[in-house]
Length: 104
Image (cartoon, rainbow, N blue to C red; front, side, top):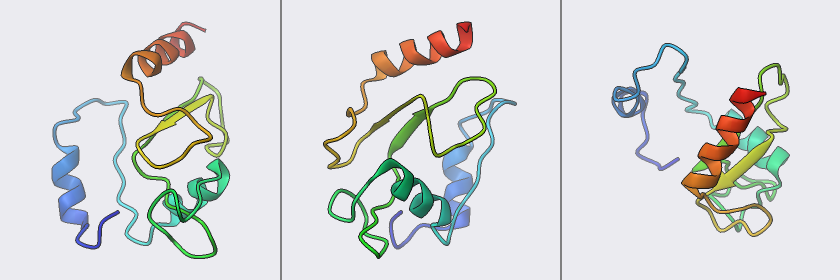
C-alpha cells in the first residue's frame, strides 16, 4: 500500500508462505483494498486514503468459514489500523477463531 509497492516486491514477500492452500495476488490498482475498505467501513482517516472518503483495507486479517462466498462479509476481521469499530489484531483470538471455523 506504499507508493513504492511493486509486483516484484509482492512476489518476494510471498515467498516464505509456502502452502498449497494459499494464493498470492498483487493489486497494483488497489481495487480490492478499495472494495474491502468500503465493505468494512474503513474511512480515509483510518487508513491510506483512496478517495471518496474510503480508506484502504490493508493490514487487515479476515476469517471465513468453508462455503462462505462473499468476501465482503468475513466472520471475523481484525486490523492494525486506526479503526475503532473492529478489534485490533490479537493473534491468539484470531487463531482460536480459525480453529473454530475449521472444526465446524
